[in-house]
Length: 431
Image (cartoon, rainbow, N blue to C red; front, side):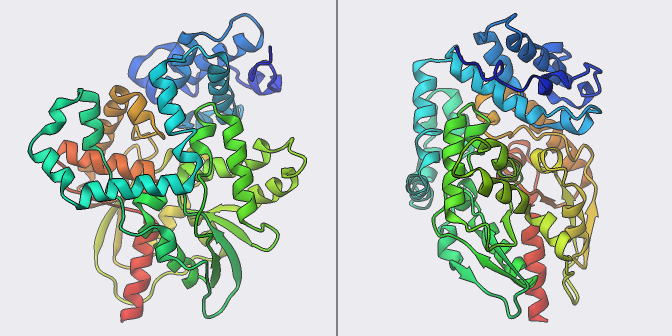
């Protein structure tokens, strides 16, 4: 029987020297001090399956899903182990084996991963339902009457984390093509799925900053999920299908860059070349796509970041790094350069800024206890900076920090770095 790990290029597994440099950077190992909860330990398990010494079991599946996939180990690794690829193959092996199957799990995955997240119109319908729940007063009534007490604690916790859905989707804020006074570059903008529902204003801010940098922006009005959720949860075929749909939306030959403003999405989007390398129709386009895929901070620094002019309001900001932006894409200085370019802004460095906040896609739902530990650690560091504003460049982190501040009684404003820059440009035009 075919196996994702047995069929994998064995040299990828052999890269790990078991030196242990990854251990102090791994949040789950740091919390438990158990070898199996470390990258080194997990790779040893993967290699045992590839060697035919072990079969994928429920315990193996539990371990692979206990991993955050934060990729801090890749930054620390002196041998350049491609843990992101191993991580995806291991989870795909878990799903292939069926050892984690249950009625409840299957229903959830069919509804969300294989359902809503495969269809943008369904996602927007879900978003509109949540929006109505919030704005009609139903949410207020349920919480005031404490009706959530009627359901299990796990669902009470989930309801308390319900994010605020924006009144307008991205296509209601952004025209399909927006052109600056002088056009130097032509770029495509990815609006995302979660980002489209909860942070469409960040997408608008991104367009405004791109226009200020002489970029004509092409934004398809209805866009598919990038597939990172699927790739990270063992659904490689679904991830590949969504990658093809993305490629069909953008003419990569006519664009100088394809822009993403979400760290977690960007890390996955830059590997479409590997995901579709055996596809006879899409492989070549996927290579060009991966080459032209740029994180917004990366792109602006690459073309020449323009600092806003004039006097700007004073503000103190700290910066939490998205794991997949810092470790997955190795983009750490560009967001800081963007923030420091804003007059009047003081950047206070956050201790352990690149330590995972516990969001990690859906990890805060599937592993709530470990997620809560990591969140508490992050909020303690944020409180220590005394900065009233926390900048972060990933919707998952954004949601996690907002909920963390509420839970821990910390008054902070969470904002995207690109939004701070957009506001500065708007303030510049008013002077």
